[in-house]
Amino acid sequence: MTDTTQGLQERLAELIANTQPGERLPSEPDLARELGVSRASLREAMRTFEMQGIIHRRPRAGTYVMQPPAVIESGLEVLESIDTLASRIGLPVSMGDVSIRTRQASVEEATALGLEEAAKVIDIRRSILTHKKAVAYLIDILPDGLVGDEEMRDFQGSVLDLLLKRGSPPLQSSRCEINVVQASRELAKIFGIQRGDGLLMLKAWLYTVSGKVVDYSFSYFLPGYFRFHVVRRVGQVLNPNLNPTIK
Amino acid sequence: MTDTTQGLQERLAELIANTQPGERLPSEPDLARELGVSRASLREAMRTFEMQGIIHRRPRAGTYVMQPPAVIESGLEVLESIDTLASRIGLPVSMGDVSIRTRQASVEEATALGLEEAAKVIDIRRSILTHKKAVAYLIDILPDGLVGDEEMRDFQGSVLDLLLKRGSPPLQSSRCEINVVQASRELAKIFGIQRGDGLLMLKAWLYTVSGKVVDYSFSYFLPGYFRFHVVRRVGQVLNPNLNPTIK
DNA sequence: AAAAAGTCAATTGTCTGACAAATTAAAAAA
DNA sequence: TTTTTTAATTTGTCAGACAATTGACTTTTT
Image (cartoon, rainbow over all chains, first blue to last red; front, side, top):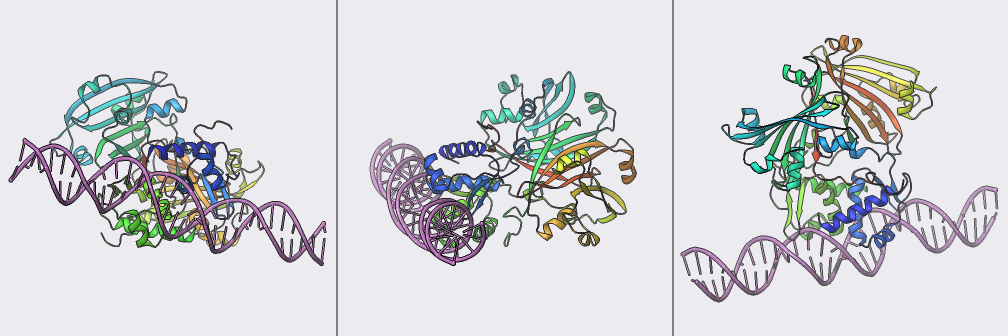
């Protein structure tokens, strides 16, 4: 996506935000004139909002802002660090002890990261505290050599934020698996709960644009402090891999 | 979205499916000719695939099919019933006892459904069994009168499937909240587990296209039998409600 | 022969202008 | 007031064009 494209999207988003749900947007020619772009470009941008269910286009009638366009942004579909999330929902958090070490990958980790069995990985563990109480415990496994040592020195926030900030490798998406696990003795100690108590666990594979996994992570959450949600869309998502005629 | 638009999307999806990841698609003029549409229409359709991270467009270079385009369709972002999901992942399931009754809405339920406090609701509860063991317990709360009595008689599957099948009211999306709860005495009995054991709970609001909530549901899952995942996209999702200048 | 520099077709991003079909609101008629 | 007719509006789609840059090819130089 181009810079100007990005700018158009942002201006269009703002315009939609300032339109009451149920109201009609200006007509495409008017809007294009107002935003200083061609109708073709405008329509491309609008497609992205239509896909998200934010606007609804009725042929020969107009484009309308949809009803429940709230709270989508706090959903899981956007990849953001726990730190960013916490600050956004107003949870005052601090970081507990951080452990960074380099070690050999387990078979599971090597598989997840697409490495050889003997490969070395960086193991980063940290806890998120609120009122001196641990509410999340995060484990990140990265291939060794991905980030420099000096970058690790002043590591304070999340691995995701670090990778996003440096911009390389270019990240694309994260596959996040949702699980409930019973607290191990170690986790029970960290969270100050009973062994066997339920914890929410998100297991995630972070992909670069080239399809390589650069971060394999386990995030444990104490129930009640974080609230995750997803907007599920009705109807088939047109995915090319559903019905491949040739493979 | 128009019929022809839908058709174009499908043909484009098929074409992408038949292209190896990493390979380049034909140029836009060629593709438009091949699909019998204008370049403008083609570009609009491509936008939707670009948004999903399925293709990547490099200016002056070409459009490329991205690497891990698999597994997206099995994620939470598509709204499907547990029954459909179970059959797809090959879990042989049957339905346990079904309880359907009409009663007064609680304050929470009335708020969720946008009803008055005294309003009546239909309360549908059922368990999903595999090998005679309950692995999921589903509670659906619907406004009374939404579905006819005769439709309820031969109700066998999921509420979602029922609503999707009848086509009215037209559904749009579902907001799904992810929680971990401790099993109550009732739930512990149903699942045959200890009271206080962790359960995955999905709380969902099902929206029609007009923004009304027609189903407020609680789904409890025994850990280990179902696997939910989400694909989280990097970068800001341009959501109009992030920074509204006027509200 | 190998490497560097230059050339040119190819490709996406964007724009202008146009037409069709159906909706919606205004105008006219009963 | 009610109904019918009319006309402007609006989205969906198309054709054609240009700019800027890339990437492969050709030529030149070492």
